[in-house]
Length: 209
Image 1 (tube, rainbow, N blue to C red):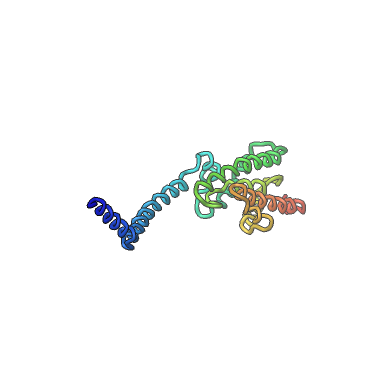
Image 2 (spheres, one colour):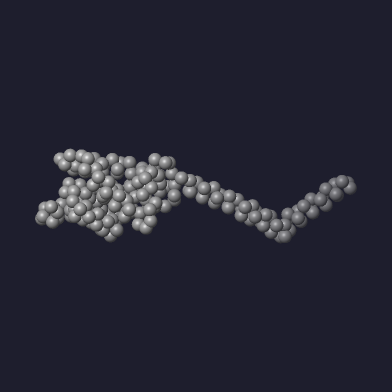
């Protein structure tokens, strides 16, 4: 009987402790501390995953061999490098093959540039990172298709492409909304096509010799 009474008393004490508001507050505080300790760890893990470097091939392609790291205006640096490199290549290939070479090179750059830009954008956690300039390379080369290789035509192609790329008239801006590297690259491809059309008009009316 005494043992039964002691058990009953112990049960009442445990019941009273469970119902004690102070104990409930203590439990809530403990859970809050545990959650607060876990959240920074999760954020750190997420941050580490986001800031991890992209594969080397994607980084080299997306930045056009680190030209995209130049400041200010990495896109302008990418376009300027493309103009200079294309001028150099035209000194090495026959005149009658230059248009086809520009077309084929543009296709290859777009095909490789889209997955590279996708990787670079995902790993840095931004929609369209400034250091990704392979899109400017593709668009600028398209703008120079089938034009005479003179300083006037190269300068005109450079200015027209940069203008269309910055202003983004329709349909350039709508293509920018496409996901991942597709949107990053195709809006510049559209800007390059618009610049190429204007360049051909200028050539047709004798402004480009």
